Image 1 (spheres, rainbow, N blue to C red):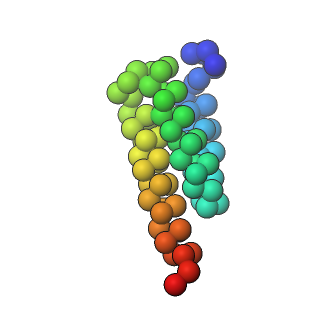
Image 2 (cartoon, rainbow, N blue to C red):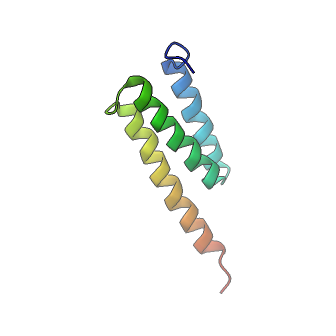
Length: 76
């Protein structure tokens, strides 16, 4: 993906895709989407772009939700 293709609108679209996966309970997929988005933002816009931090926060939040969901579904 070229720098011109990776517009703020594309960042928003990909963030929405990750959020949708998270809402659907697809926590592993959501974490992967957030992680890749964060890395792509850093590569295209710089290491300290605030949107990258938002994406990496999404990774952490999704991992936490996935762990809580697994604990809730564990037998016993």
